[in-house]
Structures are given as C-alpha cells and as structure tokens.
Length: 101
Image (tube, rainbow, N blue to C red; front, side, top):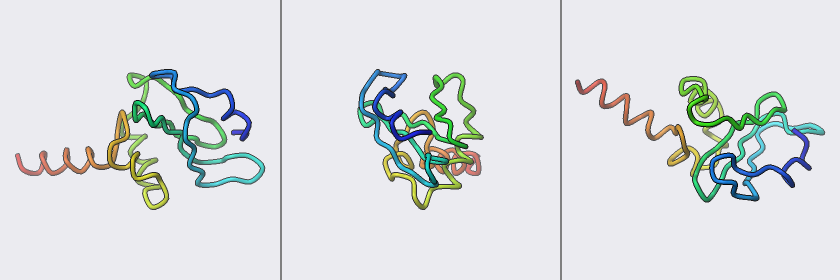
C-alpha cells in the first residue's frame, strides 16, 4: 500500500477519517500492517501491500485471527484487546468457554 493512500482512506463501517496506521513490514510501500478506526474500533489488515477493507460479514474470523496472532507482539493493543469484528481477547474467552463445557 502506498503511504499516500492514507490521505483518502476512510473507515467503511462509519466513514471516520483519518484511520490510524501500524506498519509491520515496509520497503517503498507498506507490505504488512493494520488500519484502525479509533471511533468504531474496527481494524483492517494490510497484506502483501493490499488494504483489506471488507464489511464484517465478508471477513473470515479464522484467517483474521491468524493474522492478528502472527503480529500480536507489534500490533496495537486496542486491536488485540477490543478490535472489531475479531480480537485476540475474544478468541481467548471463546476457547476457555469451549473447554469449560
């Protein structure tokens, strides 16, 4: 993703602008990272230079959680703890609940 895209990207959920950016890998472009909306708490992965800004119903929970787990050491804590539609805290709560029953 080119850095200048930040000047035009808004949250698809609530149209908030500007989005916060966390970069995990970059050269001339952002290779991996996260776009985060501080208003509605939705986050969107950047993978292989492409920001994936899909509606919740078109997002794959397992795939998104794999991405978050891969980058959890450098991802913003807001995304890890309360990010929407998926976050690592919810994943931990779900797995504890499943093992309880």
